[in-house]
Length: 177
Image (cartoon, rainbow, N blue to C red; front, side):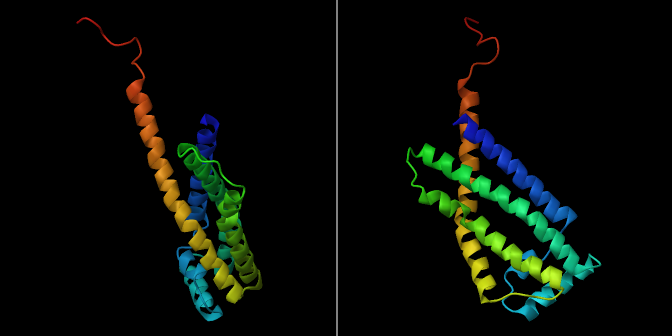
């Protein structure tokens, strides 16, 4: 299980790096508005808001979306390792279907990204009812896993605290004084 925890920590670090790059270097501050746009007109307005801090908003959207593939890979790994840790803690044997559910947010995010890249390359909004549906499925599937991540983080901190409580200090306790 120690290897799973190490893999979980590594994926959280990868997730953090991808988040930093997307938020700082290729920032699109209104990405949620872009994701939840229901019409091409709304999407176009949201993309034009990027021009307040980037000279070419479609190019910035393109760069942000390409980097988002690294982000979605990282959060998919965090999801998988969080589920493995949770199932182990509860002493449950997972069915193979659980892993399919773990990759669902990342799969939906990659479809969403394909639409956003098409928009960026064309230089005009290109969404459809399918895009709108995919975004909603992604978020509906991702939110429970974000909550699970918080639970696993707290669980890991509790385990770490308990391990430090039960291990003797170097040199052992002072006896007979």
